[in-house]
Length: 320
Length: 320
Image (cartoon, rainbow over all chains, first blue to last red; front, side, top):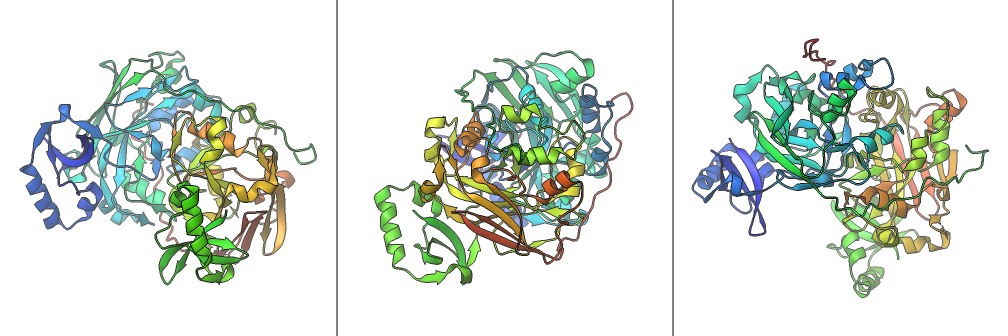
């Protein structure tokens, strides 16, 4: 009830719903989150009228991302992904105990959100462009200190997230200790639309959703997992993120990479660059049961790739 | 030309300018960034009229943060801070080579921005509450791939940032590899107002600003540094952040902690918890030459401190 989509028509951003692969217009002043927060009778009325509006095939529609988040939090909720990554890192190859204690996350660049269908320019200074297969929860209300009991009512819905990553750039940055920066700030595909929780009721198992997830390069599937394998529920991620901190309406809370949902996990497990890093012309397609499909093509670099000098020494030995 | 401030009066947010410790009203529809982007004649006209408006002492004004950023990037630009921190970490105690190569940064919670004067509730689950003395650059325009030559014109101005940090929480999180999350997402003081670059011309040395920085606990200075000790200029930070990525109008690019600008650096250098972690009632005051002073008091915990269970095992051994 139902799938909400944003799209462009004649240069204007529209909001609509998706049914049977067709987009139905909503009134031009309709916005997804206010509509989800409106009284049920009012929402039904708008949706009913929308059902009578113009219909267009999804395939002929230029989609936008369903939300423009102010904050995007990315978790690391799939144990087998982190276990795989550790196989090729310094240390004893096991998942750190701190990972099990609490769902760690990082904030990502909210300006980098792009929809399905756009070209992803090859970032400068990388030979190891990669993707990350994730599911994103969209938050309905601006909240703080959410309890587990009330968490579900603050979920607007879900979509697919591809957190594009330049692994060589990211690897250097992470040795500084702050996490990745330029290795992950250039693009995040969020789409194709927002699916409300009631649409996923049939897939619900306890507090998890049993949704098959897959990623393909040029049509060949290279990784699959199931959303039920998250080590924390979405409600738990919201409880944790909002503890003593604001989480805003429209914010994204993403699962982190599913197992086998990134080339880098394959590389770490096999010790070889197989499948090879993404190159210009590659098409990356992600499908999650119940949520749809997002697809982007890697295109030529557009950035002039300006650089800055190395750090300058400014302190005397007495201050270091 | 001049210092721009936001403040509350009778429940309404106002914008004004600060001169000689007095706040001068701007028209109610004035906004800082659009004003900075307006033609010079238009801006002068607004400021001239503002000079004739009501004046009130800064000390009697309830200030707001000068901007509400969508993205906040925090760098690590002071070599002596990272050198000090490394003295008490595993490894050989030296700054990693990757730190010198490029200015690494992380994204912070944009919803956590608070003004000078507000109480900072003691976060749950920490025995090591700390501060970070930083300067924040505010970006004037939404830009991408900024060259060093044009970077200066995209700077709206500067203010002081206190990036409050729960060191014990942060320490556990950083072992997962994503950087800090709950250890730093609860509060960031940004203020007291936005000072435009021309106001700082007298302090400019080459591409740096020579501004004395200090932090005091309950009136006693515990750390000082000088802004000229950044290993990269603000212009260089903007070039780096905007390379193949959007940086938005109103975004914050912060220097990271000045040397001796956090208790944790003292702790790492001495191997003891001296000065001790912050406690309820402590007043933290930060002053930066030319930018003013921000001050906050630690108050009682307000969060109910909801927790989530440890990670659940969901994969069979064959998938891990």
